[in-house]
Image 1 (tube, helix red, strand yellow):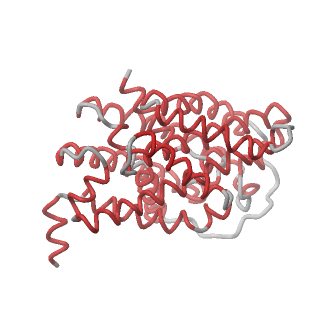
Image 2 (tube, rainbow, N blue to C red):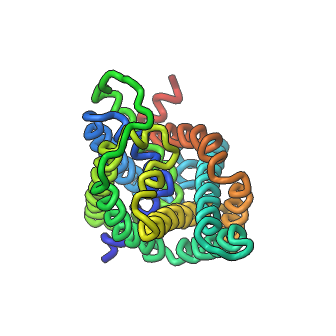
Length: 339
């Protein structure tokens, strides 16, 4: 049961609003056409390798937290700076997901001040799931595992529409697609770094089974989502939220299903980010939870779109690079510093 909970918790952290809206799938996978398979394989391999390697590093260093591992590998001053960067990445991602939850509430709940109510209730629910540990984080993952396939199959069965915009391009090389997949995997692994000690606190054999199960589940969703986007690529290529654009043909029932998928995806990532922040902040559990909620609320005020298009890409790339350094053997890191 712990293996399943761990795999579902990892799924919760990786699948966010960008995935459930089809935006990430189109950008990193389906846009590569026939080479999209190489992107999917590289994304799964990168995620699995980084999860297993980082958890092994934590176990080998006997570090109680991710911040302790950063200090042990980079020194006290640089380690604290590294922890702050990861904290900002998780806060930015959590703020974006909280804003997405509030916007979905404003679009679907016909009451006054739906945005503020949606923000407050989503924050409380995300904090409760984060504080509930592995089982709490697994709940949104289980919901996504039920909801997303239903939505994707319904979208896949839609007739291919007319092309809205599709630039003339030469076919992508598998190398470029593989690089996009690896980047996607590294970015998502970096976002989950703070919660990694909790998510993968299993014996090594059980940990490997959990990661392989996560890779199988996430890979199946990726393949299905990529099939939808490739089938409707001319119609969704220039759409900021491809699945939302396609979902207009599903009627009111499809609209509610799509809204439920988007909300579950945003809430799942918000919960994972709060769990990571609570474990990165140097306070007691209660104070850390309060500070994590405050940070996400302040960042959510910027709105979902501005956060995703500005702060997130820079922080994500920087933290992904730092995470790769953390996963290097200790001897390799020392030699690179000397050089």
